Every structure is written in structure tokens, then in C-alpha cells.
Image (cartoon, rainbow, N blue to C red; front, top):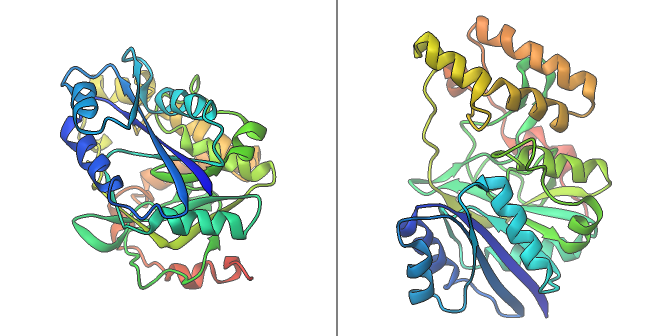
Length: 306
């Protein structure tokens, strides 16, 4: 029997967190020993009390409100290691799960040694549409490009190898964590996943997406557009608030740590400004309508062969 500990960092989203736990309570865990650790980072909305009332088997670890995503995940991983599991699954709380998702992820990790496994992320309001799955590095468009128009019908039908796994739902063999260490919470309060799986890849761990493992995510709230911000807010967003999606600090280090090498990371950081100036930013309106080949075609040579 394979032992899996699920780690969930949360903060002041009681109903969302309870929905996530309800979904996890219904998954197929036959043949698995599954435990759940919630890192409640200083919630003031009764999250911890509601978990204890409704899900007594869930272990709650309390934070002081300064952990953010990366620190909360790290604390959960460190706590999970005390239980001596085979795998640690890190997830966000704004997700619901296909009943067989975990079974398929463990099967994939067992079948392909030295692999870290990501699920197929889908939008829960448009459940056929992919979300943040299998970004591809492109130096000249400013780094990793996320896809806007991929569906369950455009992906490979077997696991495929990727350059990064977005941290919404990732299954880590404990050996990978012991070998590589934790996320870099000093550099990344949020987005610690942006450098974590690329670091594992550089250490010889293969990053796979298991298309049978389906997880449904809440759509992201789009950050305010830079062009629409007043100067004072723009300055704070770009240079002060390191947790902001637009932070230049986050972008610079995310590119360096996620790139195939440091030269391409610096080049991508510079290319971002050029793309922004000509309105071909891979995170802007251009990306919504730009042509995308099916992932099954783009990653045809990365499909794992048995």
C-alpha cells in the first residue's frame, strides 16, 4: 500500500477549503493510505474550527499569517515528512477532484521511476478547457507561455514530459523532496512552484503530466492591467510588492530559476519588455487569440513510451 500525504495551504477561504475537503473525501483511495494536512496560515474566518468540526481526521497546522503560499506549502511538506510517506501531494484549496485522480497519479509515478507527476488541470466553470497545464518555454516571448485554447481533446492521451509543472496539484515522490529540498520561500512568497519543479528537472527528475488525472480549478482573477494603473500604484506593483503577479523581482528571478539556463532567463526577461511594448505579451490580450497547435502535436516527441 502506497502512503500519500496531501498538503493544502489555506488562508481565510473557509467555504472554499471545506468544498475542497469534501471533494477529497469522495475520491477512490483503494490501495492507498491517504492523509491530509491543512496549513491554516492565520485565518480569522473560522477555517480551523470548521475543519476540526467537519473533518476530524484532517491534521491542521497553524501558521501566524506570514507564511504565504510558499511558506505554507513548505511547512506542510515538513510536517508530512514526519509521517514517512511514499508521496506528498501539494494542492490548492480552490479545486475539486475526479474520483480517480490520485490513483492515476500514483500509478504514473510508480510506472515511470524518478518522475514528478502533475494532473490535468481544468476549469470548473468550463470543464473541458485546460488551465495552466504544460506551459512551454520560449525565450523570445518572455519565458513560459501558458495556453488559452487547449481542451481535453487536444492533449496527448498518454503521460508526456514537460519543462515545468504548475503547483496547483503535484505529486512528489519523497525521494525527490529529500534530494532537492524545499521551495525557496525567501525569494518567492507566492509562486514558489515556478522554480521548484524546474530545479527538480535539473537534478534529473522527469516532470510528467498524467492526462487521466483530472482536477477542476477555480478560474484565476485577472490582475489589473499595467496600462490602466495610476503611476503610484504602477510603481508599487512593479518594484515594491514582490507577491504581485506583475512584480519585476518575481519575473526576473522566475525567469532565471525556471529557464533552461541563466542566459536564456536574462534574455527572456528583456524580451518581455519588447513584447509588452509591441502588445504581443504572452500574458496579455494577444495570447487570447494567438494561434496554438494542439498540445498533442506540440509535445508529440515528449509522450512517454512504455
